Image (tube, rainbow, N blue to C red; front, side):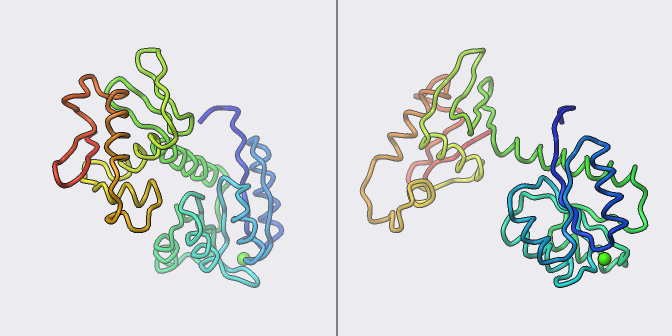
Length: 233
Ligand code: CA
């Protein structure tokens, strides 16, 4: 995490004194923070895409925190959630974590340890994002967002389709992906079994020329005859 990174925190909390204390804490740390005072507006704000992390109270007007947590997770796995509550029986903690919260802090809390938990969750979620956005094959690092790779200081350029194939294979690495899977998931064909196309093979051949030392005997992008493809990393 870089020093000057500004994170935007959403605090869903109906107790004004606690909410204000948290806003002060985050501002002091150089973050920005907004408050939602009930579950409904909290959910709406959480799904706005503006926030890097949600601190979520459980006992809230209009919609309780468990429901909010569940509704956020139905829309996105990526937004980190820390539940913050006085309602801290073991059952509640387990329930919150089962619904997909990243962590659980009981009230009353001290600001130092709370902030450390927030930082840890942010660091972890950033690592996961980075993992999803990059692929390293030997001495090549591929940046999915930039559609390019780097090998010993020189750039390798990929088409969007090539990156989509790599991303899909990377999400299913070390398992066999059939040509139909790729046609369905990357090309969006509903009924790939009926399509006679060499487009997947042609793309894989082009990809091998870019990432394999010896494209004729690939080390990463394997063909399993009659079965499909496999990314080995
Ligand atoms: Ca409350």
